[in-house]
Length: 183
Image 1 (tube, rainbow, N blue to C red):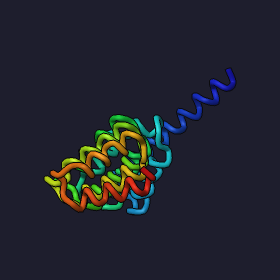
Image 2 (image 1 turned 90 degrees about the vertical axis):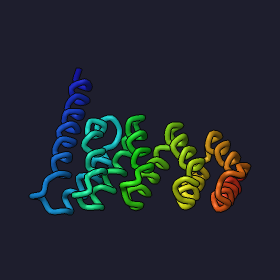
Image 3 (image 1 turned 180 degrees about the horizontal axis):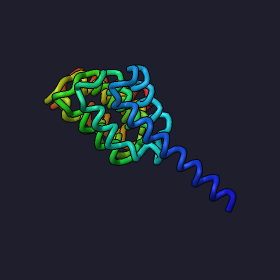
Image 4 (image 1 turned 90 degrees about the horizontal axis):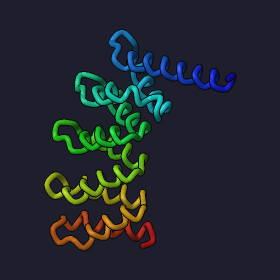
């Protein structure tokens, strides 16, 4: 019973902290450093405790009126949460034509840290569809897949190397990523 009370008190404290941090991200009255710190702290809490902040973090990432650093830290916090819903939110950021490259790059970094099959799938989609966007996105996706290094990631890289439809730079980066894995 004592252990159950300790666990419920810990969850309650985490829940309270998440609520305060959500407010701090949006507060125009607080110094910018506190808003940045709030977004970073949500990422540090991560997991199920911060999952309740998922919708707020998504809004922060997309709100162009907020400071870029706060938005980037919110994208990182989504990566720390790592849920399927967080991966979906990060995929939307990666594919956005509206958001700048700094936010999109942070979203790719967050997917890289998640390393789930959903995150690998997002990178595979980015790799294959890079010709329609930019070769730089495809090269970055190949690099991330190489660092993830799962069999699913390796299969995506092999497919990219073999694909005659992909930009040569993307195919070269996929080959380099395979070499780094040792395949």
